[in-house]
Length: 415
Ligand SMILES: C[S@@+](CC[C@H](N)C(=O)[O-])C[C@H]1O[C@@H](n2cnc3c(N)ncnc32)[C@H](O)[C@@H]1O
Image (cartoon, rainbow, N blue to C red; front, side, top):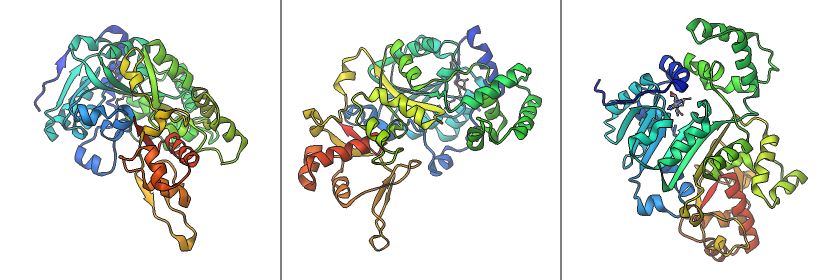
């Protein structure tokens, strides 16, 4: 296997984490990207799917023409290669502490001829030493494993271009409460990270009460299907989780401005609380959205991760690309709604089945005739004002419907 991975020194502070990922490569290595992608799998943060959300002014498509510089920070075994494969016009840099993980990235690079991928073994904290800047930075499941997350984020901010976007996934505190109980238990009885320790942990899991707080997560956790995943989930030595407020505070303290949740569905009442319920009315009409998100986090109760994107707090591009769903703001009517769904359910009138739209894995949303009329005019070129005119539906109803779709994550807006 050819190897063009450059090597830089790894500081002591991160050695403990590096040692884990040297021994336990994470995530499970993908053997073939074509087969993986054909299976419908993709990165939740992928630019090709989310660029209107990241750059509502169309910068990615119109100006950059997809030829952007992407950094996958803490890429693990697959993510940088996945990004390079899915974004062939982009130049992708993957960095990680783990030479073993990078060796697998290199395997995927060689196998799929990913000439647009460069790999470096280095800590995020030293990214400036590459002397490169990026349009998009992705760091999923990494920052919460840093001894000082702020330091890592500041380093990433330093290499993000002024119009750039960073997408992050941080662990969610409430959804992982039971996981932290088990981590604490295993730490206190001296469980390490050897194969014997992994076997011991598996045997303990068999003894757990079905009522244990960790069970809902353990039941669905793909991580338990392989040993490195189990180590990552239950035996990680450096692992801290965030509430919604914690995520927002972290961004603010590191010079970023929050721009949105990748899956807004979780953070708004519209998809989760029945229509007409007073709590839904209260939250849906709350004047300050940022106060609704932590409340919905409490209502949801199981959020085990937060995936969101941000921009520089101090860049003029950040304000210039602000989406609005305020009907009183004239800019709202000039925005172009763009669909963000991946399934349309056709009606079966005889069976009383309304048409519905869906963004899998979120549930289908049935549409009334009027709502369908509006939805049919969302073609990526009509402004909201044009949708009103062509559909013949009232301005108020169009606003309500588009706002609901936006909050459920079923559409985005071009500004
Ligand atoms: C949970 S894995 C996530 C991998 C990948 N982002 C993904 O979503 O598949 C965390 C990765 O971050 C890397 N990592 C942890 N701390 C790091 C640091 N300070 N600098 C660079 N990489 C780091 C680890 O080596 C590991 O490969």
